[in-house]
Length: 315
Image (cartoon, rainbow, N blue to C red; front, side, top):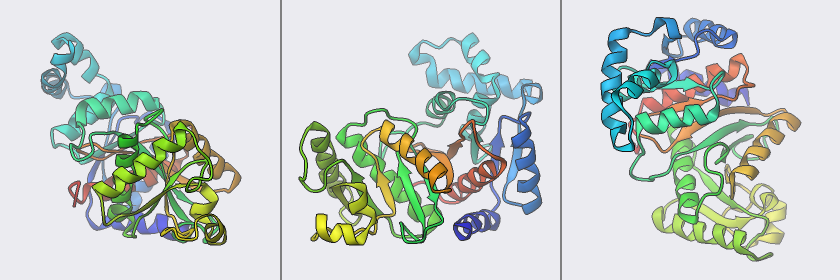
């Protein structure tokens, strides 16, 4: 577990990026800043309501207005919205004055996702915004030496088959980009290859077909129950001809309820480290934080966001 976390931090140190933290008054963020600066993980811009540059507020408000006026946002509303540190941080990234932002210790996930979506824009390759967690467990038998990716755990309540397929592709890209390992993607269900039926199973089956068509070289399979995805002995019984064979390191959940509940169960019951939610599918990197996050969680999200910004998306 610590090896993967250490590896991500080391990668961040190799090419320092500028990450914005718009919750500079939070005690956990203040402690995380000390660690990030001491270990030289990233260059930081730390914001509070009082430290916003009035001239930049005006500049960002004009840019935000041009992005959102088609939705009925007025210039006065744009100025008010950008005067909040969260949207200010997102616009810094949009305008090329920072490489990414990390927030959510104080702001809700909905607020972080809204600012990210409105300011950073969707990656047109996928046209879906989602989130994932890098789960680092103590048991090396599962995933890649105990490391698994869970998605989507924070954004889309009930993804369509196409959205589910793109969630798989986006998360697989993150695995290669940040962890340098080959993604092995399991599309999860309560059924394994026809052991049960129903519209929820059909949705996952369709998503698997779409994912395979969109990324023929990606190892992706389903529909799979989680034990068939993670345990080779179970896979031999339930899915003897499957190409995942119990070796999955990416778990794609059929809906938000399943993903969110699962990551919190694994984090608490298995004493796993949950890095994220990492927001995916946008033109620039950013990370959300659980409002129950600890200091190390903030440091890790900054490191992941920094590593992601070292490579343009799709590279």
